Amino acid sequence: MNTTSSTIIGGPHGRSDARAATMKAIVQQAYGSADVLRESEVATPVITADEVLISVRAASVNHADWVYTSGRPLIARLAFGLGKPKQVIRGKDVAGVVASVGANVTRFRVGDEVYAELEAGTFAEFAVAAEKLLAHKPANLTFEQAATVPLAARTALQGLRDGGKLRPGQKVLINGASGGVGTFAVQIAASMGAEVTAVSSGRNAALVRTLGAANVIDYGREDFTASGRQYDVILDLIGNHSLGKLRRVLTRTGTLVLSSGTGGRIIGPMGRIMRALLMSPFVSQNLRTFTPSVGSESLDQLRDLIESGVVTPAIDRTYPLSQVPEAIRYFAEEHASGKIVITVAQ
Ligand SMILES: NC(=O)c1ccc[n+]([C@@H]2O[C@H](COP(=O)([O-])OP(=O)(O)OC[C@H]3O[C@@H](n4cnc5c(N)ncnc54)[C@H](OP(=O)(O)O)[C@@H]3O)[C@@H](O)[C@H]2O)c1
Picture 1 (cartoon, helix red, strand yellow):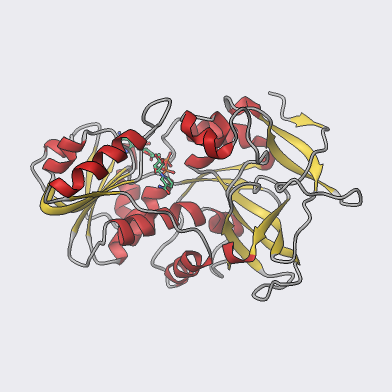
Picture 2 (cartoon, protein in one colour):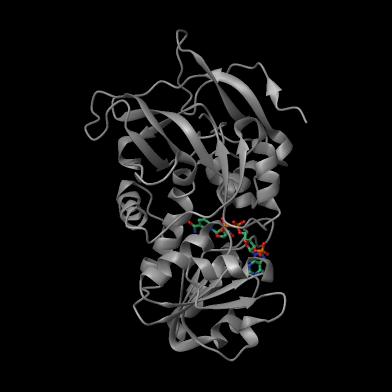
């Protein structure tokens, strides 16, 4: 595998100056397999007055990184760039130390330990964040642990709270409970006082029980849509059952939250989600997705949950920056138990 080149290109925002030092980053100049990701020497990014430069300690892998890499589903290229990605440095989640701040930045100082979910650019030694996207890192987590939180835990929190409107005492089923999002969702749902049923392989049953699942369904042995048991909320992170089958195991006024699935080559899971949204007004159940809200507010809420001991990241594997292609290949197999971490600096 060739992950090294000496190309010098612009930073995540395309800004660089002739005096800037260079840094190592994982860049992508075309869509394709993980082989399109190359470790390159690029210009260290330059911040504007509203931005913060982060010295990256760790990042983590998300489904969005694989979508960006592969350019699949094709509809994603409308946002990412038609022929090749507009933002060439991969990576969305980051934990690190503030290296410099713009003139208008008020909440952060050089040396602060921070974490964030960015549009791109975190598989690199330095990353640029708008101040509004940044939050102080949970004090009780390592940088590796903190880097697992922003996108996946935010998805879990917003999926259950905003999408599912989950209330104490309700029965919630999480399909895909042992993955990056699912391991946070089990813990957050349990902390909200719900009775959690986790759907995972038998291999991961002990993990999801430890995280707070009262019941575990091994998808290799039992189809939860045929069980006859009903749930107030289903958070579907896999998308492997028809809407009809999922509705059969929802209570009469239950809520199905779709956040999921690979789907077809062109529009991915969007077809299924659109069908659910169109059907929802005509049935007694709520079939919905949720609008992701990215920024410091959800990171501050997650920090409270983490520092109070309610939520702890589950980490499957850790790779160095140079091995991001291997990390993405492993993620694309869709069998990670928890999160995959990229260590950038000690
Ligand atoms: N809307 C949003 O903002 C948003 C954000 C992030 C993610 N997502 C979606 O959420 C989904 C999950 O993301 P992720 O990061 O958690 O993925 P992930 O980490 O790759 O999930 C892997 C997990 O899925 C489990 N799994 C595989 N097949 C399964 C099956 N048939 N039934 C139940 N579990 C199964 C695996 O368990 P075993 O290894 O035990 O088989 C593994 O633990 C993605 O499809 C993504 O599109 C949405």
